[in-house]
Image 1 (cartoon, one colour):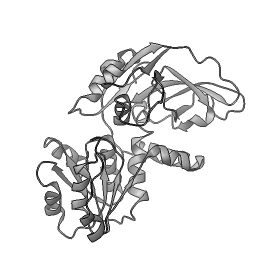
Image 2 (cartoon, one colour):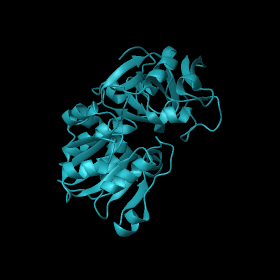
Image 3 (cartoon, one colour):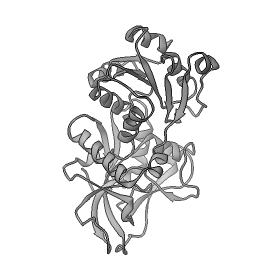
Image 4 (cartoon, rainbow, N blue to C red):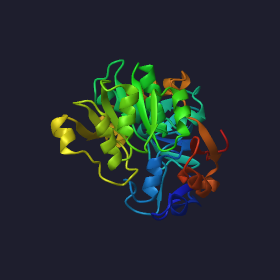
Length: 329
């Protein structure tokens, strides 16, 4: 059986390799064996491989945050059944098969396309929870975000539009302005020059911009703070720059801004199972109803893991890179 193993911290395509490992065999009581059909490569995976994000403490280690598949076998006392489609909550999902306690898997609709199921676990709930849990946003309020072309950024645009919120979006390339506008963004600007001033000019000086969502840190956080209305909140969820988030005393004291962080792992560890299941059911419906749209640029077999990681690490992509351990989806 093939699985992807992190062997050392380095550039992602040099850090990992597809290796032969033991088949999980038959499940014991309370256990499930799942054939992984599709798994997205996320920025957090790439940062783990580079040693810049929490990950396995000992190497080598099997990896892969995302993974969705079909139940092959269940042990005694398990409510899931062979043939069910499930999301794997484990973090070693880039494998032909994964096994674990039944609590590690959440049933998802069979009608949900594998390409969407592969992207269900991390990015949609992150976008949803950051919009819902930090600021009491009302229709007509604005949200500003950086890294707006990321999967989370695109989901924020779509979720906000569905709620009657407006989005101001910061990107690195001018070519993305039209694409994100077509997706539903209200304002899109590049990070060149004074992005905060450009957003304020487009949205209006008095526009209620109460929430900033930050994937980058460093000076990018400062730009979001410059954009927010008094009393606003910046939520940081990403490590892209590798630098500490920056806000000045002028922002916190004079304008009453606050800075907080979001990590989906923390949410999952502190939330009752029934709420997690309900959230994922809602995220699946969002894909099926067309609220969420997440393009896929390429699929790779596990044997092509190094090529897939090189592709995922490249700039200027037009969609997600997927691993398909048991054949194309």
